[in-house]
Every structure is written in C-alpha cells, then in structure tokens.
Amino acid sequence: MKGCYCLIIEVDEDKTIQIGKKLGKIQFKKGFYVYVGSAMNSLYARINRHLSNDKKLHWHMDYLSKHSKITDVIYNKSPKKIECDLSRHLSKKTEGIKDFGCSDCKCESHLYYFKNRNEAIESVLDAYESLSMLYEFYEK
Image 1 (tube, rainbow, N blue to C red):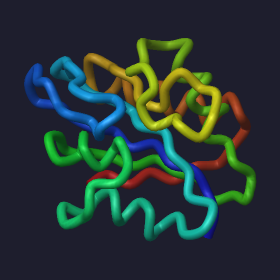
Image 2 (cartoon, rainbow, N blue to C red; image 1 turned 180 degrees about the horizontal axis):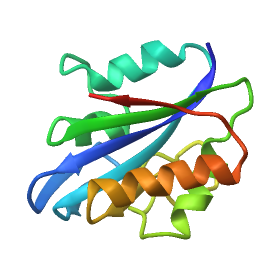
Image 3 (cartoon, rainbow, N blue to C red; image 1 turned 90 degrees about the vertical axis):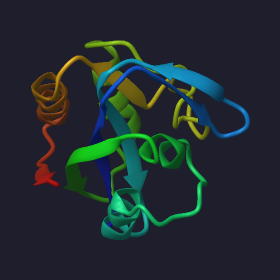
Image 4 (cartoon, rainbow, N blue to C red; image 1 turned 180 degrees about the vertical axis):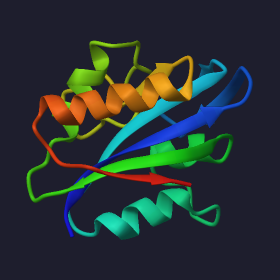
C-alpha cells in the first residue's frame, strides 16, 4: 500500500533535541507539530515504525519521536506522492523547522509548529481537502 501521512506530535515542554548529525540541536517549543511523510512501498509498516518506541534512529523524525508523543496520524492511500503538496499547504499556515525531514526534496521543511492539537489537525484536514484527497484518521 502506497501513500502519504501526517503525524501529529506533542512536545510537552520547551526542549532542545539533537536531530541527527547534520541538523544538530534544535529548540522545540511546547505545543504540537505536524510531520509530513510518504511511504511509497509500505504505508502501514512506515506508520507503525513511527509509532514504535523500539527502532534504530535513522530519520529526523526518529530523533524527535524519542522526546515527544505521536497523538494522531492522518494518512491517505494512493500511488500519487502528495507529501510536498501537503507540506506547501501547511507552510502557509505556520512556521516550519528548517531542513527537517526534507533532505530528498526542495521543500524548506516537512515539520510544522502549532500551538494546539486542534489547530494542527484542522490544518492537516484542510490540506488534504485542498488537494481533493480522501484521508483516514487514526487517534493513538
């Protein structure tokens, strides 16, 4: 199954987190973040990997997830890769964390900050609807 996904992530307090070697230490504000990703081979396996606490640190998101909580996953099943389209839509709503999760594209970020969970979820749903894409919602 192919598709794209948005992880809703809660950071419970202001904190500095080491994100891989290249990005280094990043200051995260208390609030909610949306990470936009894609899985063009195995969507459910990728989402389950992100939800797992037992994984090797590989992607930027892996480093963040060790210090935060994924509260929701909103995803679509499609062979069409809309990851960057979703990211561009979210970038119009709020600030992104520069270079996070976008080393294989030309986006400035694939991680976006929101003050609260509802605002994060509504922004993701709006992004999917603006692209006329069906989505599914998983609340952890």
